[in-house]
Length: 343
Image (cartoon, rainbow, N blue to C red; front, side):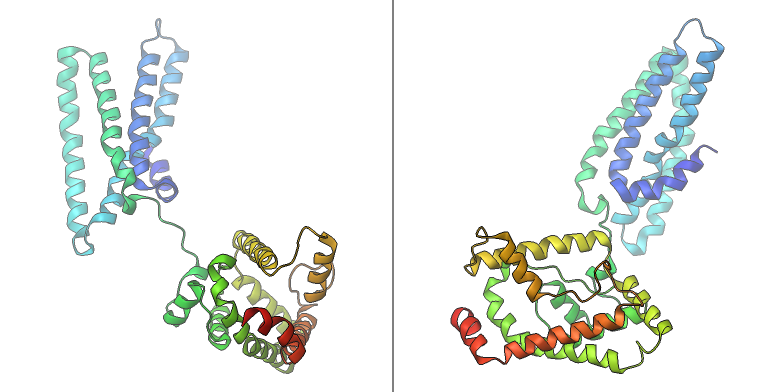
C-alpha cells in the first residue's frame, strides 16, 4: 500500500529532476533510511515509543526508497528503440522479479551466518554503491529532465514550419504570414508564436533591412486594425468579450512576457547609445521622447485589453501605424535619419 504515493508522485519527480537523478537520490535515501532504522532498533531498552518511531520512520521513508526502483522503466524507455520497448520493459520486469525472489533468500542466509546487523550494513553499503555506480547516468543528456515545451516556441501541426522556423530564429518574415499563423492559432485556442528580441549587437547588421521593411509592416498592421473596426468582431459587447478572451488565452505566459520586457529594454538602450544619444544627460528628456513616440493605446489604469477598451485600442493602434507611415513618407525625415545614418 505504501508504494502508492511513490507511484502517484514519481512522474512529477522524474519530470523535475530526471529519472537518473531520482534513481541516485532513491539509492542514497534507502541507505540513510536503513541506517536510521538500524540505530532506532539498537536502542536499549526497547519501549513502546521506540517501537512506534521505528514503524513511523519505516512507513514514511518507504515511498522515497521505492523511487529508485520505479526509475528504471522511464530510463529504459528513453534509451530503447521504439520498436523494442516492450521487449526491454519485459526484460526489466523479469530482472526485477528475479532479484526480489533471490536476494531475500541470500540475505536470509547471510543473516544466519554473520548476524542481522552486519547483513544490514552490507545492504546499506550496496545502496550507497548503487548511488555511486548510477551517478554517471545523471550526466547522460537523454536521461536528464526534459525542458518544458511551450506552444509559443515551436511549430504546431497546422503551422507553416518554414515560417515558424524563421520567426523563432529571429528573422523577418512578411507580416501577413505571421498574422495568418497567429490568427489560426488564436481561433484554435493555441498560443501565439513569440519571437525573442535578438540583442542589438547580434542584429545590428540587419538594421537597414528592418528600416526598409517598416513601411510595408506599418501598412499591413494598420489595414488589419481598420479591418477589425469595419468588420464584425467588434460589433457588439459579446463579440468584443469573445475576442478579448481569445487574445488573453493566446498570449505568452507572464514569465515569458517579463523576459521579453527585459530583452526589449536592453535592445532599446543599446540602440540609443549606439545611435549617439547621451543617456546620462537627462532621464526626463528620454522618458518624454518615449512617451511622445509611444502614446497610450488603452486608458490609464488599464493594463490589458478588455471588452470596454478593445475597440478604442484598435483605433489607437491604427492611428499609430498611420502616424509612422506619414513620417516614413516625409522626405526630410528620411534624409535626416534613415539615409544619413542607416543607409
